[in-house]
Length: 76
Ligand SMILES: [Zn+2]
Image 1 (cartoon, rainbow, N blue to C red):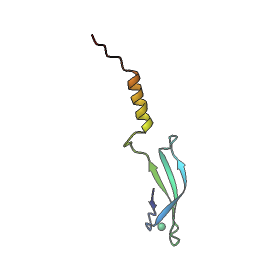
Image 2: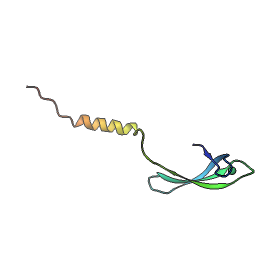
Image 3: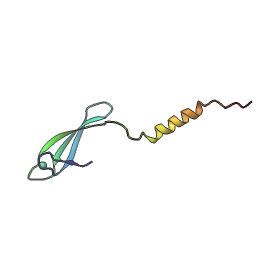
């Protein structure tokens, strides 16, 4: 993740983070501007929003659960 200084737009470094929720989906990022002439320090907020592709293991678990609960097809 690339962060920039909100004052001079130079590259910023994350120095520490503070989890705002128990599930770590909202964090505060304590940052420092890398440009010596600026040297600003500031806090960004970072929040999880939504999934694009679920974790592979959750898809495998879903498939396994569906297969295990199939009933055999009976032919007459
Ligand atoms: Zn700066």
